[in-house]
Amino acid sequence: MFEVITVHWGALYLLAAGVALTIETQRQCPPSCLCNPLLLEVNCSDVQLSRVPDTLPQDAKLLSLTKNKIKILVHQQFQALTHLQDLDLSDNILAVIEVEAFLGLHSLLSLHLAHNHLKIIPVGAFTGLPKLQMLDISSNEILVLLDFTFRDLAALQSLKAVENDLVFISRQAFSGLTSLQQLHLDGSNLTAVPTEALTPLSDLRSLYFHRTGLTMLPNYSFRHLGRLKVLVISHCPWLETLSTNSLFGLNLTSLSIRHCNLSAVPYIPLYHLVYLVYLDLSFNPITYIHRNLLGDLLRLQEFHVFGASLLQIEHGAFKGMSHLKVLNVSRNRLTTLEAEVFHSVDNLKTLGLDNNPLACDCRLLWVVQRQLHLNFGGNLPICTTSVQLQGWSFLDFSGGELSGLLTCRQPRVRNHKHQALTVEQGNTVVFYCKAEGDPQPSVTWLNPQLRPLSSMGRIRTLSNGSLEVRYAQPQDSGTYLCMASNAAGNDSLRVSLRVREFPSSSKNNFHLKSWFASPSVSPDETDTQKLPFDVKTLLIAATIGFLSFFCSVSLCFILMFFWSKSKGQIKHTATIAYVPRSTMSSSNSGTGNYMETSRFTMKLL
Ligand SMILES: *[C@@H]1O[C@H](CO)[C@@H](O)[C@H](O)[C@H]1NC(C)=O
Ligand SMILES: *[C@@H]1O[C@H](CO)[C@@H](O)[C@H](O)[C@H]1NC(C)=O
Ligand SMILES: *[C@@H]1O[C@H](CO)[C@@H](O)[C@H](O)[C@H]1NC(C)=O
Ligand SMILES: *[C@@H]1O[C@H](CO)[C@@H](O)[C@H](O)[C@H]1NC(C)=O
Ligand SMILES: *[C@@H]1O[C@H](CO)[C@@H](O)[C@H](O)[C@H]1NC(C)=O
Ligand SMILES: *[C@@H]1O[C@H](CO)[C@@H](O)[C@H](O)[C@H]1NC(C)=O
Ligand SMILES: *[C@@H]1O[C@H](CO)[C@@H](O)[C@H](O)[C@H]1NC(C)=O
Ligand SMILES: *[C@@H]1O[C@H](CO)[C@@H](O)[C@H](O)[C@H]1NC(C)=O
Image 1 (tube, rainbow, N blue to C red):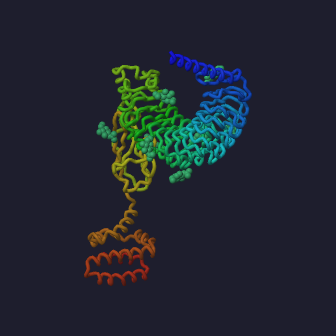
Image 2 (cartoon, rainbow, N blue to C red; image 1 turned 90 degrees about the vertical axis):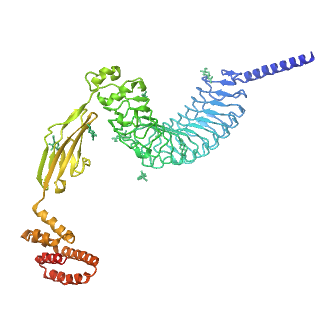
Image 3 (cartoon, rainbow, N blue to C red; image 1 turned 120 degrees about the vertical axis):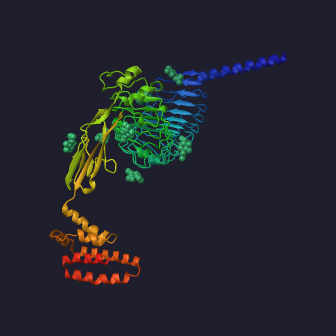
């Protein structure tokens, strides 16, 4: 009985204490605010406050002061609220935050200061917030972030500083933010990445740069952010290229560079990002994805190039990317997307291909065959070239109908007549190779050594499929092959070219040959048979001049020397026999003796 009474008393006491607490809380609840004593929330949102109320429930965990007319936060404004975890001051007209304004908020986890009129945050404003994890200073008018502004926020994980007029971030502004994982610097007027300022953020995982004035991404822009996983750069209309080493030091898993002015995929800057899983280059004026240049992105699963200017994705463009699951190339200028582009189409799960001027032919059959395994994001690809399929998605047709609609025609080279030309050296020759087929075949020319010829150089392919040989040389002679190929097959055409040497040039060549080659082959016969002593030859010999003559003689002498050395015993006689002859002929200054000397040498050999 006694025990029961004690228990009752205890319960009564607790009840009384509870009521007292509630009354206390309510008593401290500022007029026009809503206080929830159970959740310990104080809601003073949108009640025309011009300053922070003097009395606030000391046990409050959440305090909302949004949408008021508060202009200033004074020194130790919230000192008594040691349990407060969430403080919302957004949508006021805050212009001044005094030093140590938040002192005493030991438990505060998140602080919202967005949509105010802050122009500057004094160093020390955020003192005394040891547990703060989230700080939002977005949509203010902050121009500069000063050194040590966030010095005491060792627990801060997320900092949002978007939509400010930031033009400069001081080198030590982020110093002390050792736990920061997310940084949003969107909508600032920064024209360069604040590389130095980012240095202390050794734990940063994601960095967002939207709507910045970035004009270029210099080398080593992010060199100290080795733990960064996500980098998002967007709306940078002046960013045209990334420097070779701009992403050096990063080990990203996700990279987005959207709405910028990149005209090519930054293959080289991306090269080392072998852990990249997500790559988004949407809304850049990129026209081609070239073959074999993305192969190092072995782990890439998603590639987005939405709304760009893509004209072609080359065969083998995604070679090596065996994990690619999502490709989004909607809203481009692609006429086709061939299966040969991928490492394997079997892994592809999502394909955005709508809003491209697709040509309906056999190159897209693979899409039809795999349509049950592919997610088109609700927008089916539509052909624009085929009359029957105009405006329809080819996926709406049955398999039987399609095999007749998505067709290709093998290339055929028109005028299959064998072209054979013989021209004089120095002339220019053009061979034609016109091919037809559906899709329009590509024409490549192979030289007699079966190597493909490019559109540059003396022997080049022209854009209309012809082959041009300028200043034909004897060594250009041979059979050239024109190869026309498309998705349906190939056809080829052989042409042959013979280039006749100039008579004079043939003799010129012969001289050189005779000088070099004669020691090794039976010299006597060739010389006597093939050395014609006409006026032309003499003239040419004269133009060689004294110096070259002497050089030639010396060269011959050296050859002689080695030869004789290899023979061993004749060495002596050979050397002696030669010297007086050479001096004699040069002192005579007769070009006729030139040949005589040579003849003499040959005989000696
Ligand atoms: C505070 O009250 C307003 C209405 O007066 C409401 O819209 C808002 O959601 C409340 N805020 C919180 C944090 O409860
Ligand atoms: C920042 O950029 C915006 C828009 O580009 C411009 O209106 C504003 O004047 C710039 N501010 C500064 C301080 O340069
Ligand atoms: C970036 O580094 C590469 C290689 O070191 C160099 O070739 C290039 O000129 C550098 N670019 C700039 C803008 O400094
Ligand atoms: C984007 O780059 C092109 C050249 O690549 C240039 O003509 C154009 O002016 C650039 N756009 C902007 C907004 O700078
Ligand atoms: C790069 O990141 C991956 C995971 O994202 C990690 O496994 C790897 O160890 C990191 N490499 C370096 C050099 O930090
Ligand atoms: C491609 O990207 C655009 C823009 O991000 C998106 O709206 C669309 O749904 C995506 N398509 C697919 C198939 O994921
Ligand atoms: C191809 O172009 C070259 C020069 O541009 C021209 O000489 C040749 O006649 C053209 N060939 C055909 C088949 O049109
Ligand atoms: C041309 O087609 C034949 C079969 O028709 C094929 O064996 C050959 O590899 C093709 N050549 C090229 C270069 O595509």
